[in-house]
Image 1 (cartoon, rainbow, N blue to C red):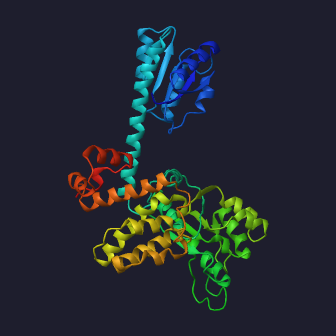
Image 2 (image 1 turned 135 degrees about the vertical axis):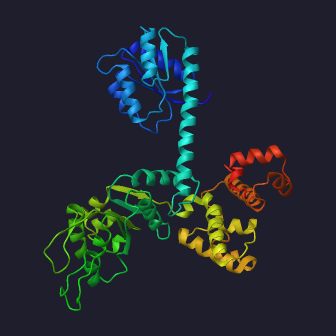
Image 3 (image 1 turned 180 degrees about the vertical axis):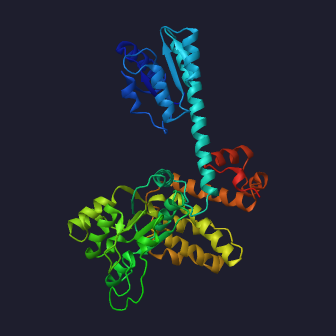
Amino acid sequence: MSTANIILVDDEKAVRDATAQSLMLAGYEVDAFGSAAAALQKVTPEFEGVIISDIRMPGMDGLEFLQRVLHIDRDLPVILVSGHADVATAVAAIRKGGYDLLEKPFSNTQLVEVIKRASDKRRLTLENRALKEALENQTRPGPRIIGQTPVIMTLRKMISRVATVDADVLIMGETGTGKELVARSLHEQSKRRDHNYVAINCAAIPESLLDSELFGHEAGAFTGAKNRRIGKFEHANGGTLFLDEIEGMPLSTQAPLLRVLQERTIERLGSNKPVPLNIRVIAATKTDLKEAAEREEFRLDLYYRLNVVTLEIPPLRARREDIPLLFQHFVLVAAARCETEVPPLNSKALHVLLGHDWPGNIRELRNIAERYVLLGEAYNFDLAALMNSDEKLDGLSLAEQVACFEKTLIEQALNRHKGNTREVMEVLDLPRKTLADKMKKYGLERGRFEG
């Protein structure tokens, strides 16, 4: 029997301990609480399990607890338990949204059976939510963050959650990992999507021009300023300002930036009139800003002000299983742009791709995919991985390497044959059940390849 998380609430310790022990013996993981108020702190919309609560308790009783839980997530299954159950109590509990009502004393078999049904319902609810969210992300305009490794799936969830919260964000990641892609995704999923997204590379603009670029200036503010100019902050009003490579921002500009973040107003150069701002600031860095602050290369107070929400993007070498999927995506994009067909990737080339350390991360992979489209089978993957030709696939066991190859070969075959499993069976010489099992194992749904 698969384990499930259980939140158990009962003010009677003896009953609580006995019920918890029975559930743990049945294979469940149990968090037991003596009061509804304490249990409520553990309830979130992401909770994957079932809640069991006594009705008659001091303070917050079970029916009030039920209402509080359903306010957090209306689909959470709550099983209510009562030693004084009657028809009126049962009807009230179900009408208020309770999943079921058990009358004491009840058998362990009866309790486990109800929990099993409630757990199945919760699992289906969360799966449907995930599918709906994935569909919305696929149909929503804007950038795509591609990958199926747990770290990338977690990053996508974090982006979706943070995007709806109007807080400044600090994105950390090596060069080429896709920091601007994450910034654009935050903007496109936020309520600010219909307003400007303004990006500025702090390290690419000369220090003498940075203040003018950010804050704008009035006519005559300095030599050559013939007209008023709106700065990046003001241009982003109502939308999002992305400050890339913020570690390269001069210390002289960091102080006024801090003031803008705190007060949400700016003054154009040459003006004393404050301009109110309604913006979200997203900053990105490839270095540890706290260590830079310790070296007095970055303001510590600015670091703490930017570090309200931090998103870390893993390097490509830490998510090798995504490499075939990413490469295929970049190849398809480049092929569509060049209006050319792409030869299938052979196992030797795939081995080279998986074995490379990717110091340039996603950007480097995209460049190789574009060259592969231009040169086709004439492209020499050995040249692309000359420095790594004798290295093993760091971080992947033999079984993981084999799984990567196997998944990619099946995926390519499904793509070529537009999801026709009969043709794929013939090409790969696989029995129907074996192919079905492997497609299920690797999450390769036939519908993705049809059409």
